[in-house]
Length: 417
Ligand SMILES: [Zn+2]
Image: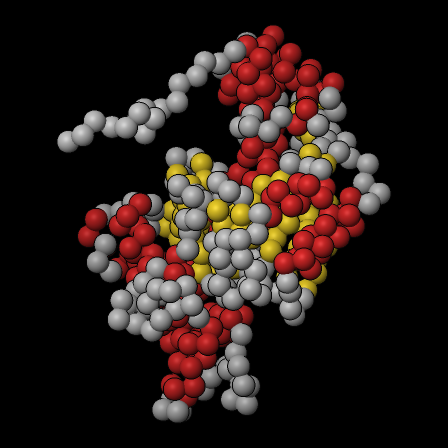
């Protein structure tokens, strides 16, 4: 065996930490704990961060002096107030910095302004029927201009959540399938140049996963898989607390993993991709075929040409036979790809997100049954499948989480801007 090449060993990069870095890291961590509501009092912060009250006091003073946070008097009950128990809590200042988030979908561009808690304070959407590269850039810049107009608060950076594949190392949108012929677009560089703000991009499914990790109900899970289901099927993976995006940032294309190597060709060049089977057109085809032989009652109107995802899911939740059969087939296909993923990653927390809010849990329930009663049910581990905390907005909130994650890790210092 030949010795490893110089510079290509698996040795980690070693570097020291100076006192300035320590201070910045501590400040960033305090901001994370306050912004995500994990610690909101000085005493709790000092305990969580294993710092002395004096050191913590310096960090808090620094954040207050920069008008990022403020102290508020909090009273949970009238009795507390009457007894004079009014704890002081730390929360974001009304002047705290903002993040701009953008979401790129096949027929929709969205822009939002949000604070470090991920709370949206302004949103603009732009629907379109056709697009080219220049129009995409100009529309994103217009969204930026409209959202920042009249805004007095500092905007520190822009996060862009986009359909994939994305090369996060090169910060490029690479070769998206069926996306108006737009290829190899260095989005971050272009938007940074046009706005003067640090700009980052992320695959929309990874953005969904990051939103769940930072702001969702699943912040406690070190490993989680986020599946985004609608026109395509994408996966985002949180591995040991961080979003995992592979060597080139092109992970997460679950919809283009094959579940049938002898299946039809896909536009991506692969054969038998999951998306060719688990899609809304196939669900409609299945309903039509069953209707020819099924004579019982149904909630799906006979004269309707095409049933939307929402039509089918709503009817399936009400135990409609045709809708349940279509959903069962969809979840069956999906379960093959998810089971492969579970075998590979050994992940037990799975979150399903959609393009629009879904009231019922019929998809989660159907998939839970399939994954916990199939070939893996003898392992003794239960696969937990739940709905996203953000309705249909996880990838959009993820565009904000992309930036706040960098701020909370100390990678992006908001006091420099
Ligand atoms: Zn494919």
